[in-house]
Image 1: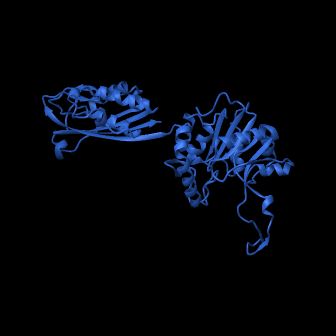
Image 2: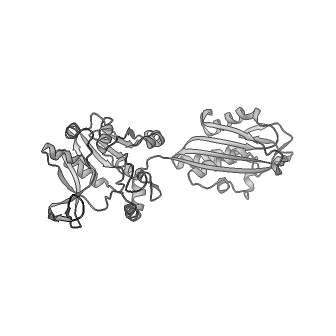
Image 3: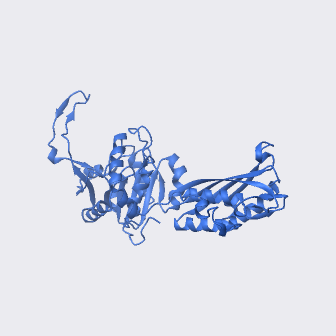
Length: 397
């Protein structure tokens, strides 16, 4: 679980309900260094060990699509509101009541570091509110109401560009949300502090803590991520995500061989020819499972040139596959099996195969689907000379 039970003093609220108007598409799930950007953001907080809970505010579509997977990973999910402030209110309701400190972060800031998070929390505990910021690089000017002309040049030395996480003592954030005008949006919650007459402490940050708002920002973040990727991948705790794999196998049908499908022996005049017992179902399923974690296929672990495994039970192949999944910390969610054969008729054997596969894989039978199709007399399969199996597997890793 991402939350650290020893860090009961802080909650993280990550706001990811924006529509990405300037990006031209929803940005939180855009790929960054091979993973959705939001995963990097959540992982930065999950791996810090500083929080008892993480709350993620998602828009309606993403809440329905990704919410269950986030909750399985130990992240609480809240419905995003029409404005940033409403999203924050929604997330704040799910924060641990015992959390004395609250960090508010943009889902589109994936490069935030533990060092910055801790510095903001420490300063908030001392001052009540803390905001990370960097000095401006460019000269800033005010413009006329119609945007046609510049009017003045504020002194750059007295201005900074603010970032997140903005951290608060719990009662300070509660006061902000109480004061924030209904229906009005704020670019950040510390803006309301000015109305309350409270000054947030400045926490020096760095320019890598970029907010991905435009396509150009994504390129910059990708460059930063490549620079840090080795360190990031090796030290951060990966948030479990759903993955899928596809498997396929085909064997000739010949006389004098037993017909074994999914570990079940089926009486028939022909069986499947193969180096092992020819169980086309388990072979396809195992390839799908290995594919879901990018671990190759069964031929890597049981090469057909190895005569010592001639006639091996495919249940042993499945056992090895499960060991590989366990070593990658992957958990099977479900498998879907489609056999293609002209003979024998397989529908009477669905439940036996389903029960056997679920037992071999350690799954509930409800998580195993078995079905069969024919080739309507076409080709080798249609003439009863071969059998094919397709399998799709999903895992959490």
